[in-house]
Amino acid sequence: MSVFSQEFKVQSVEKALSRRPEQSLKQIAVTLGVGYSTLQKMDSVS
Image (cartoon, rainbow, N blue to C red; front, side, top):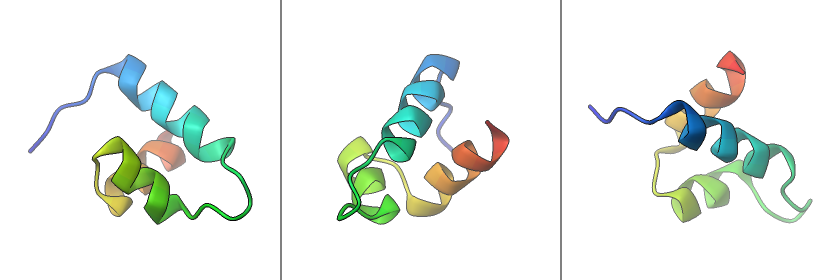
């Protein structure tokens, strides 16, 4: 199990929320090197 810093989580959620319309959340997750469900969880906690 990976442990991400709070800073990484915040930056990841900001990137996900500011993505272009043609970018999927899955594409952002791949770019960040995290799983899709992990990014979803980060987003739901913020």
